[in-house]
Every structure is written in structure tokens, then in C-alpha cells.
Image 1 (cartoon, rainbow, N blue to C red):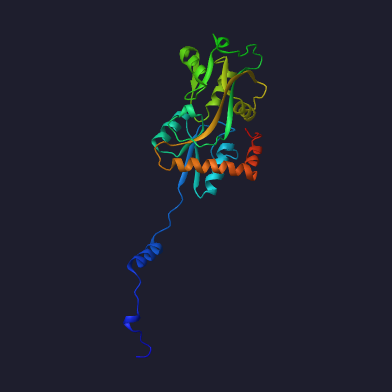
Image 2 (spheres, rainbow, N blue to C red; image 1 turned 90 degrees about the vertical axis):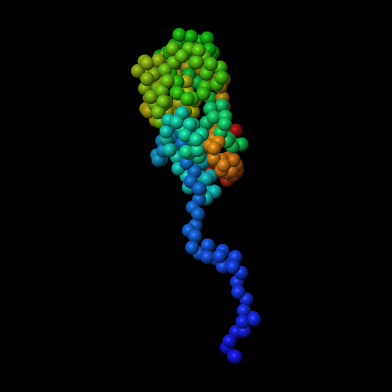
Length: 263
């Protein structure tokens, strides 16, 4: 009859297509993975979480991963805990790491900075660092869990009775306060970190550089060895930092911290 469709001309949609449409309509969208990176306060590389200046390394990572469609979170916890908890897979990555500090982690091809260590003392100190022999009889302030290069690490282990360690989310602040209080003779820290920190604390001139070491190492964001996504995240970071450099956005971030590109 007119107006009726013959059954023989009716083609039913395949069941697979119907099920696919149903799934698309009624399955909530999958949210982008959350990247959680952790570190203690170590500005200008990684600073106070939630502040206006969380660290230029943190800002670089945040821009890269948010542009890649991920949500991003940065937290401050003590450094040893950061390494241990990220190794277990409780966080995505640590930031501000040397390769020797966490050799089992997944490292990107691209670093985000270079750190060179120096010794510091109170203003008026006549002592100068000139190699291991010059450290004899000196009480030294260190940060627990940090690596200072094979030679110095070995010296500190052999002279543990003259070493004072601190930890926590802002250990350099503690060490500077202890230095100024006369609790030890000298402390060792990265030059960029120390310059930034003494400005932040308002003690410029009260703490002086008394000798630069020959220790210089690249700094990385290092991804958890137990997370299967880590290799992908490392690749995203390396490609992202190259793109930021090409676009000029990297220099804009560095300018906020008065830091020059390290290469």
C-alpha cells in the first residue's frame, strides 16, 4: 500500500553500531589525567606551592602539561618523602632532581636548569673554601637527602660528627637561620637558590659566598618509575620545553625570576 515501507527494503542498523551510539550517549567523558609533582621549597626552581612565584620549573611544567590537556597540581613535602612516595607511585613526579638522587626514575631528555654549588658563611668570615682540606674542623650545614657530588658526599659521610642536617618543606630557610645563629661555620647550596633565598629572607649582606665548587649538574623533573605513563610524560615535557623556547614563552617565565636560559 502507498505510504507503507516494505519490510524487504528496510535495513536494520548493525547491532555493533547501535551499541556504540548508546555507549557514546550514556558514558560520561573521561577526564584528563592529573599530574601531581612534589618537592620541598627550593626557589627559584621550585618554590612555595600556591604562591605567586611557585618556581620557574613548576611554571614550565604546568604550562606544558596543561597545554597537553592534563590537570596539574604541585605540592610541597620534604625531599626524602617526595622521592620515596613518588617511587611508590603516589605522585607523578619530583621536580628539581639530579639523576644521581633518583637513578631509577624516568628522566626526560631535556633538563630545566643547571645548578652549581658554593659554600656560604656569615658576613665577616675570613675562611674560604679551597677544596676538601679547607673543610677540616669546619661544622657544616646540609639538607637531608640532598646530593652534593660523589667527592663531597663521601667527605660528609666520613666526617658525620661535624655535619648538621635539616629537613622539612623549606630546609634552606632553616639552614640560613642556623648559620646566622652560629650553629655551624658554613653551609653549601646552589648559587641560584641561595641568591634568591637571601633576597626573600631579607638577609642580603649577612650571608656571603666563600667559595664556588666545581660541582655543576643538570636539574630535571623526574617521573615515577612505577607509573606506566611516565615515559609518555617525559616525552611530553621534553617536546614541550623545546616548543616553549621556540615560541619565546620560556624566556618570559625565566624573566619573572631574573634567570637566564642555561644553555
